[in-house]
Every structure is written in C-alpha cells, then in structure tokens.
Amino acid sequence: MRKLIYGMNLSLDGYIAAPGDDIGWSGPPSDELFQWWLDQERASGLTLYGRKLWETMSAYWPTGDQQPDATPAEIAFAQNWRSTPKVVFSSTLDGPLDWNTRLVTGDALAEITRLKAGDGAPLQIGGATLAGAAMRAGLIDEYAIATHPVLVGGGTPFFGPLDGWVNLNLLETRTFPGGTVLTRYETRG
Picture 1 (cartoon, helix red, strand yellow):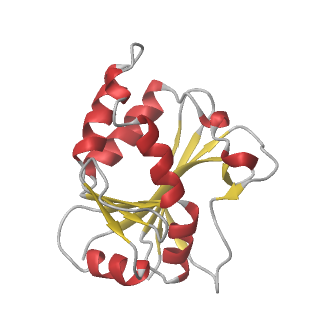
Picture 2: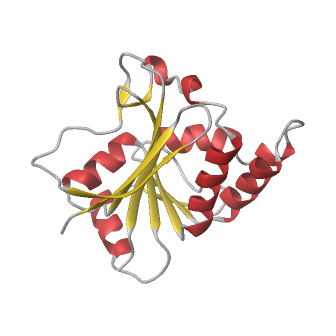
C-alpha cells in the first residue's frame, strides 16, 4: 500500500492562503526549504491536486525553469513537476490537461483509495478541500507542515473540520533560515 502525504506551507495561525487566495506571505522560501520541498516532490510517485492548487501550480511551473532569475533548484523543480504524474480532482475543469496530468471528475475518495492500494512511491496530496476530504476519510498517512513566522488572520485553513480526533506521532522537526519550522507527523493506526 502506498503512503499518502499531505504537506504545504502555512502561516503560524494555520492558513495555507490568506483572504483572496493570497500566498505571497510564504515566499520566496529559503534555498534550503525549497530544496526540501524539491526532494519531497522527487520522492513522490504521483501528486494529487484539488482544482485551486492545480490552477496555481499550472500557472507557473510549466515554464518556471525558463524564468530569467530561476535558481538551479527552481529549474529542477519545474522539470520534475512537468514529468511527475499528476491527478487533478475537479467537477468544473474540462480535460484533457497537459504536463502528465489526468483529470478525475467522479468520486475523489474512491479514486484516492484505489491509488493508495497500489504499490509504488508515496502519493502527495495538495489543496485544502481535497486533503480535508481525505483526512475525514482517514486516508492521510503523513503530514508535512512548513510553518512560516507570519500571522495572516484568516483565509484557507490547512486543517478543516474533522469528525473525530486524529492521533499523530512526531517524525521530524527542523528549522530553516528565516524562521520557518518544519514538522512531520504520521497518523497512529
């Protein structure tokens, strides 16, 4: 069975985006943090996106390596992003999608469960709505949280409402330049 990992940058008050879907507070990340995210992406066999995060990522990363100020890590991230298989869950997008991406318009939880049941590298999931549904269904195996030292006061929370407690074990804590703190947890069975 494949591991499903939910990881994102978030503000100290728990938001992945400020009001108006503003994520400007989270970047640019330190080179060390960006490399950590790149390593996570490289270790992933498949990335699962909700529509909003897909639209954010696909607006930049297809040509991120062609930007005049792109760092070597950004170039590697863009190349990896294009080549890594992706599944986008949306009832409003039309397919087909580019950059090694498949669109799923049906039951997201059934598809995630099917994908997890296979063999292979870990799955990454992004997007608060999609990940929230996977959390409530008990499908998330690991959380990777890069907490930035900023309070945004509202927006899109990393954790949505749950039907019950989820007990976790701490796997890693690491501090990056600029004061961002990474914490990784696994769900307890």
